Length: 373
Ligand SMILES: [Zn+2]
Ligand SMILES: [Zn+2]
Image (cartoon, rainbow, N blue to C red):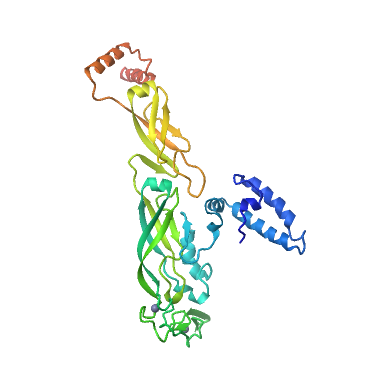
């Protein structure tokens, strides 16, 4: 895998749109194509690198991941690396299905059934934390490879022996009618190895229960149900087989002011009837820590929504923010002073009905209904 910046390779700005990237890639692919540069190692390497860069940047999801994490986004984590897993079931599907398909994970085929289980950890975060992201630690009781035997299950200084029953294949075949059925060897449980001198610490299991503290990085923009995957931090595999993954399921607590739908934040803002009639400014404390000054036009009605572009939740793995939508609730005063009451009485005397066309229209329609017209 190349370490050169993909945008640099494709001679594009980081802000370039898909069409620009595509045309630049085509130009470069033509230039370095092996057919045109027979035997030139430099061109061949360049051609490969350019193709790799384009493979990534043409896919919006991969591009977003690359923009956030760079090349690290696609490096396959060995033990203990965090990778991000956002929504969708493909990852869980792959890890479950991969075992049957014999692909995806964990080296030699015969050990795949011994891979450690995936684990789930539920974490509650606030909406502010979902907005800003969060670096935190969790403590989990987890089965981990046994230290004295290095996860092999054999007493230190001894080795497992090749299983005599399956000759180390881990599988045995049996004839059933017309079919030959292959199944895990009953003697070695598919590992192909038999432990003759089990380790005293783990009794030959190769793993022990441990309390582990793990660093978790919650990226900005996560939502209820978003999963963060810690690769290789699940249950240890038996006898040195690959560990499973730990999935952190995020739950976002209700916020006192904001509700959320995707990247849009909603807030209800009660305003006085005088502000509604005369107009004014509303100051809303945003999750970004800034105050958002929202202009209220004179004559605004209850239920009207005012939209602040870019003041909503950040786009997960992407750029920019959603919007903040403020729903106006005009509040009728309930406690009037004598002077206020007098002023309103005076105001009422000046009313002609033109000030409130909606209620005027409503009452005249009502009169018509009552009059049977
Ligand atoms: Zn066997
Ligand atoms: Zn052990």
